[in-house]
Image (tube, rainbow, N blue to C red; front, side):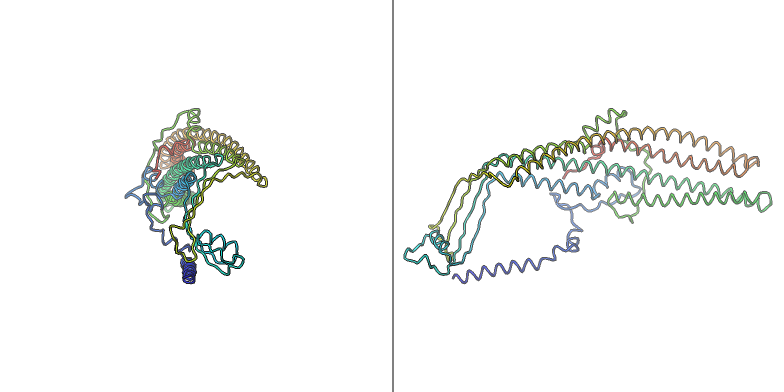
Length: 481
């Protein structure tokens, strides 16, 4: 019977080892990717969501933000970190419950002390035996073990509070990622529109110059124009074509950047609709914006929570000087053939008072480390507050500058277009040289480029204020599941 049980034990160990070797390819990267590439989010949010398809037709700014908030990997990683903190909270709460375990032990040997105590626990001791020379013996022991921590100086309570604070920090970190992501989408979206406007302006400039070049070519062939005038127009056409090529390249770059933010492939076709306004509601004055930022900016609120958490860590380290009290119990059976009899049970129960009087100054070092981290968090909180104040001030100055440049650009375009119209008439009448015409056309083209950039820069500046004060996370909320 004993040898048969031993055989089963060794067989179980061998099967367990073999199974571990067979399944080692489970952890190969290619296998993991193949298992998870088509995964869909479960109700508990355990897997990443599949990509959201683009809507039919041009993509509006609101659609771009919505898709980015669903697809962007940075935001999905932040959500995964929230689930990690939820698990930490659950783990911290487990310390308040008793632990219960089942075990089975197999022992083989010839030690007299082990033989004596195992025979006693089997409740089948024969005092006629020679306990000095028991020979080789076998024993099986199975039972239940329970343990319940009654007191640990408040460390378990602090662990739970720190874990709950960590969850709040993770939510604020996600809002910070969301705030920055929405701002990046708005900035890139308007950069894309700006590049598209530049292409259109450059294309119109090319068409205008080519019309004049055709007229100049006819006049030159007829002997009514100089070769230098013809060459000047050809040079201006080349410059306009170069501007168009540069704008097309910029459009391709911004399209790739926007696709990256949206979490879609850069080869996927992407067309944007004309969106002139973000529709964001922001405080008009710097003081109001700063007050909003100091109470709503996720980075500042997150640092406040980290300060609280680090203060808890100091108290937790100091609790290492306090003794702990545990209750424990054990119910078990012993038999050499695993033929347990309910009438031969054994049990023990007790209270353990444990006080670590000296641990090589570990507790003191732990406390010093916690205090240093607490000091660092206080300083980081101050640094972040100053940085946010600077960001908000810079953003408001940027909006003032963008508005002023837009007004100047509009007036500049009106003047340049009127000037080009007059010079064109003079040029066609022969009272203006081709050089004067090219100067007027170039000035008008540059004015239109400046106006297109200034129009979108105003909206980007407004979005930058919304980011600096932490408003974008509230303006574009996402599900926390």
